[in-house]
Image (spheres, rainbow, N blue to C red):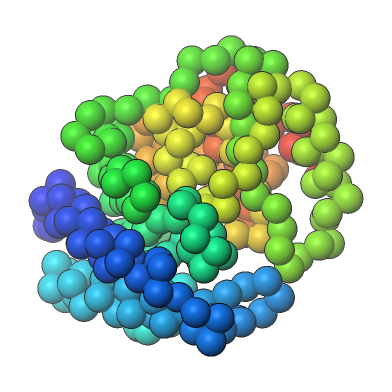
Length: 263
């Protein structure tokens, strides 16, 4: 039986050390270093090198574990354990020098996320959780907010950057929340958005066209902080289903009702 708490501590340290590399590189990126993986979807040598560093160190923690990693530097699937990695969530922010980007690392035990770590590099904040053990920010236990209604809430979302098939519905929903909440923010890193729901900075977050490495770690942190995480239908297909809703318990029914109605 692996020691999840000990491994989580090691993952936090790996994220912090990789974050030092990313901070050092942020002002060195040139236009020639930027590659396009698709419409408005970018990657740099920094993403790839950071992922290589993370993968190398994670292999030493659980040698039999496989990997689901954004940049594909390692892609072998494990029979039981799999690491789900985004070495730089917020690449567009990074290449523009906008200070909101993060490292997201999760460990899945079969279909269940059992470790989640989100390291926001610019503020040097490490959010983490072990399944059943609560959620933490740099050693301090965190909880979702206690706001009672959407009207009392600050919400977060992400704008679709290639899949515009549901854009009209999304914009109607965006306008509704804009008019009926404290505001809607778009930070550019889904992992950070989820971590901020977990610690009560946001009351709710929703987005579609996401990948497992964007949400796996953050979803566990929200759940362990006392929040709800679902897909747009209120179901459990939010890691591989490309859509996610996360909020505190108080606003969840109102929040998911509006999202269901839009989509």
